[in-house]
Image (cartoon, rainbow, N blue to C red; front, top):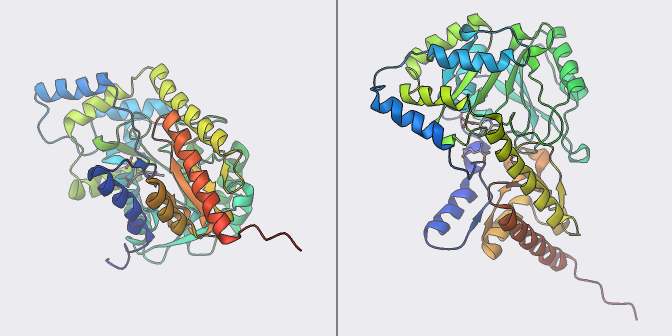
Amino acid sequence: LTERIAGEGAAAWDIHYRALARQAAGEDITVLSVGDPDFATPTPIVESAVASLRGGATHYPDVQGKLALRQAIAAGYRRQGLDVGPDNVIVMAGAQCGLYAAAQCLLDPGDEVLVPEPSYVTYEAVLRATGAEMVQVPLHSKADFRLDPVALEAAITPRTRAILLNSPHNPTGQLIDADTWEAIAALCQRHDLWLIADEVYAELIFEGEHLCPATLPDMAERSVIVSSLSKSHAMTGWRLGWVLGPEALIEHLTHLALCMLYGCPDFIQDAACDALQTPPAELHAMRETYRARRDAVCEALAKSTSVTAIRPPAGMFLMVDVRATGLSSQAFADRLLDEEGISVLSGEAFGPSAAGFVRLSLTVEAEHLTAASLRLAACAERARVELSPTPATEA
Ligand code: PMP
Ligand code: GLN
């Protein structure tokens, strides 16, 4: 198992922890290396958890999740046109736990799972912990890292069992459009594959629309949808997520949860139920804040000749091309932390196709982000000039 869960995932955060250590030591560090909303969880959700605790919700919870919460989660998907109920849902300790548990139930040693790359750093260990292999399908920066279903299909072998997709995407902020989803659904059916969709950023879309692939014809029976309240409701620390899928799979997941998790805290489930009633206006306000931050970074970097930002239509991250500096993305990230006290993650941590890019999180105020972006561009400019000093004019 040690070998199976080894991988780039854990190492990706080294620079982030270095940044936090320096911040804790009193340095002025701008942390753009983690996707953790800087907003507090809305007060009514906190009040709900407190009231539930005071009311005595301190016992073992329902292993599958409280019926009221599973009903509220299912209702969200019914509004998207999916014919599901509480038996299609299991509550998990965050999407991460949901992904891990779903992989354990779906995969056998030797199976292959297609994952577009770059991808979220934990996927490899999640899949390999089952004995399956992650098969990376490159996304191309020239296409702004948009997914090409033809490339996906070309990677299918007789051992392919599932495709794991994440839209909106971490780290690129790309969104899979309806035509692409339809092509993916068709190939899942042609090749009899499971589709695992990680939708944790589904509420954070600036342009375009989210489509839950389980809503496409004949896809509900082969789709596994994983999501959480972490990003949508600024609740990363509450560890509340879920898996939605066919009833038989949810039954297996419940058996696994019984021996692994024994359910999520009761009072957190009560608060989650209330969170799902949050007026859309409040979620909208958070989304608009991320949008303004994205725009601020793009505007600040637009004039730079040393870096180029790819404008993301969704999510809470932005990819910046630093190849003109001549440095690897890790070397640039290290230099940016040393010289400017700004921490970002190296694109390579997410996959080889993101080499030469760094990922910025939109998790500080717009004004602060603008200043950090200008300093990033200046740092890149210095590196570029060092690499190729202006040649002396010919005599
Ligand atoms: N999937 C992706 C793509 C993520 O970026 C993250 C981290 N936020 C997760 C899953 C895990 O989220 P959660 O906090 O719900 O476990
Ligand atoms: N998913 C978030 C990110 O990509 C944070 C998860 C974590 O801290 N491990 O930054």
